[in-house]
Length: 157
Image 1 (cartoon, rainbow, N blue to C red):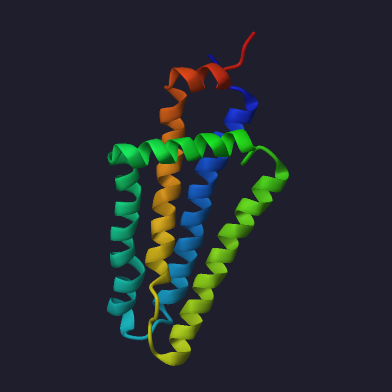
Image 2 (image 1 turned 90 degrees about the vertical axis):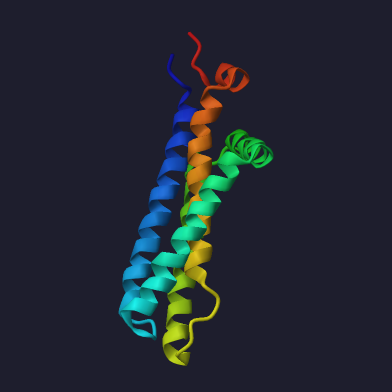
């Protein structure tokens, strides 16, 4: 059976949010590699190595720890019920938040260039956020298999 348009839009928005966040992150890494103090090896450590660990943990832990998985699945379901990703306004707000985070990273790289010090690792924080977004996108597929949810998201007729 086919899913309702609202569910398809929500699922698409979850996927596109992960893609958009990843593209913004990639642009920030490319920007930082040529500008961060300490040379390319140090820049790679701050932009790729540590953030990869944060992304991995923030993706895996909510999917492997049952209470966290239930809580995040409930959050994803409430997001759908609230209309996230189903209206132009919610899409604009979501994209705006991602762009704001990207601008924040750009500003932090600029601060590091001016001061010669890398402060809070915003790259690891942003990567952790991408991990959680990816976990949410995966949980959308898990929710589709839940009989109670499936009954509400399948088209009737």
